[in-house]
Amino acid sequence: MRHLFLAAAALVAAPALAQGPAKQPKLIVAISVDQLSADLYNAYRPHFTGGLKQLAERGVVFANGYQSHAATETCPGHSTLLTGRHPAATGIVANNWIDQAAAREDKNVYCSEDERVAGSSSKAYTVSPEHLKVSTLGDRMKAADPRSRNVAVAGKDRAAIMMGGRTVDQRWYWDGKAWTSDKQGAVPPKSVVGVRGVSAQLFASAQEPLEVPALCQARATPYQVTATMSVGNGRFDRAAGDQRAFRTTPQFDSLTLALAANLIREMQLGQGPASDLISIGLSATDYIGHSYGWGGQEMCLQMLNLDRDLEGFLAQLDQSEVDYAVVLSSDHGGQDAVERLRAGGNLQAVRADPGLSPSEMGKLMAPQLGLSGPVLFGDGVSGDFWLDRAIPAKDRPRVLAEAIRRYKAHPQVETVFTAAEVMKTDLPTGDPSGWSLMQRVRASFDPARSGDFYVVLKQGVSTVARPGPGYVASHGTVWDYDRRVPILFMAPGVQPAAPTAAADTVDILPTVASWIGLKLAPGSVDGRCRSEAATCR
Image 1: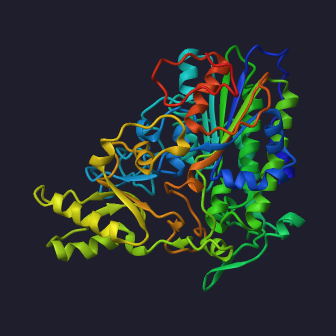
Image 2: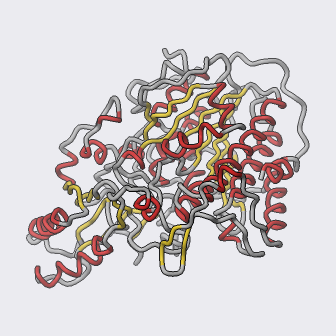
């Protein structure tokens, strides 16, 4: 995979090198590794020999970092990474939420769409940052100095949108078929054209199984997930033309990093009069985690290849002599496949009862309450649920009470919070490791978008009720295996360290702001500058 990265990264000729060191980083590189939990990072950390090892040895590693809120999904997590705000402020309460007032038939709203566009739906949408309520680091940098460039590259549109913000110079992401942009009329730079060509060449031929080192062979035990499917010993072979399988391979991150490296060179990021930012969303770990869990041979191959690709990426940055700094974290963690966890003795691990879905629960409630219609709306078996707005106002209290009674009585449910209860709770601050369940839910609650009540599953209950191809394991709960993520800072003059204290992803923006002298108005962020990685003022 490193060879693929190097081949794709060589598509654009390097411009003249920057002259001399800068007083502050001229290029901020913000990397998100989707679904890189602290558990996964710590499990493979002794085996890293490339880029992830370099970042740890050259920088500050908070192995006990947190996406501190309850909505541990891709869109909310990415919305915290470069805004310094919890989802309660960003407005990104989930990947999808229900808006029963939407004019269209589809009431399910996707976090990175503009549902006002005619014909848009939560599945076939117009990509937009419309729902993001706050400014990103790139937005703030350009507001402070319009000469700053803000570039976003990612394997998912929601990662590129939430990390880039509204004022991007270039934004490119994989839409399932090609590298594309939400910027209307955007002319693809040479970097994009080149990586598109490499992608086309890959799809034209089959992918042979990857070679498996001894470390990964030791994790190659297969586990039966369904009658026709097992996971654990995959090697990422792929048929010619299978674009969907491409995203569930280490190659996906190789090309994303190659595109980022080429854009840095082509645009000469870090060589202008003001500091620049490139945010990079690496999505393969998430797709692999969902498809296979994180305890098998598949994730082992992904971690080792990611480590090597990051080594090549950092080597190109070093060769450019651009004065750069890196922050790396993740949007959320993840739970391993239930079958592997149970085989290892974790009997708490079970799959959720499909009857917890709002549609199934609503069907049971409707005849008892004398109602017609769906009764309840939601996206999944936990999290935010909404009462049908067609229910008369006089009936809503008893319907809500019955829904809460039923969910609380279910053996897989830890607790249920009403919207009124959540709103009575102050927004949490301080060490996220000690937050109560209510505080975690409050940190991702927006009264304009969140549900009428919030269902918390018990620890160990997987949100994947019915596993199938591409969907074996997941995340999205309030528990620490989904909340804990590593946070790594590396910048010139910052001494390597490994603090044991907890950190929060909302601490990233104020810490990076201190590196580049970006002033933040008091109270404008939820996080704090980390003195372990910066000279905070």
